[in-house]
Image (cartoon, rainbow, N blue to C red; front, side, top):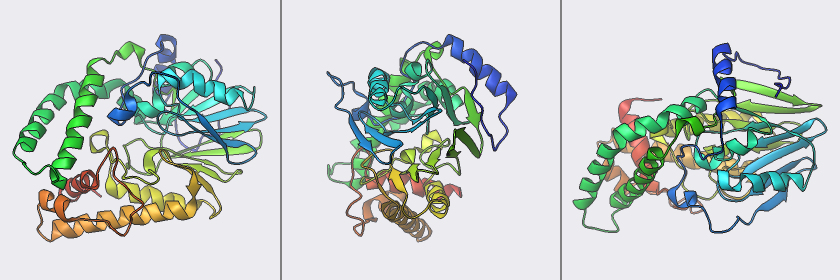
Length: 358
């Protein structure tokens, strides 16, 4: 496969690219390690009920199982953002084919979690895979770290839960979510096969711009947020923005601290992109329905206020447990618990504040 012409705004390491191209020859279909919600990882007994939403004449959002897929159709080919899980990836391609028979030229992985990269073994046969530099080592190396470190983490969590008798205690509920997540990730890492991984072949730092005929696609990384390798994708001419998991619409976001994420970094990403896009831009979140810039701005306010509340609690002498039990964000009733509770976010940001990370 020849590498399509890119106008690159950052330096791409020749060594990284050579290693990545070698990996293409070794890749076989398999699900890469995932940091996705455990419930979302379970394969359904039947194919997902895809929902295809047309946002402009050229841009679509596809809902299925996992993170939302976005794609742009041009005369020069198709750009796809995220590919959910391996078992549904052929269905994603099929949905794109209901719209166009143009070649799929590029796939952008917004981060390393398996509900956004699991379809890579299918898409590598069709397209060049692009992601931030951090995504590649996360897909290839992070499972070994999990296998070495998570058993002790799980034991510590289980011991702490055992000492908390109130089933409605927000701190206990947050710990139970962590236990479920860590247990799932450990099981996933133990079944991981390095030779089956399909990481991005093209990686970037800062920003990369793709040109397909007269359509400009900006892929940006600002700071660690959901993970340490988040990309936002802006279809500039179409005025459509794909946020990946830097935006959970209508639910408590997942700050994957073990994957390099940061609550303060979330706000930095949101501030950067809100200053860049026009107010009439349509916004595809990583999870939840497509929305507008006003809703994204509201989510930014939630994140900024949450960080502010945790900073105030930490500086006021509250322990992490006390902060989790007392901080409420009732002024944002639309942000509901799900895979993560508010307490999980408070705990992660508290650790970040205490560690002095900006």
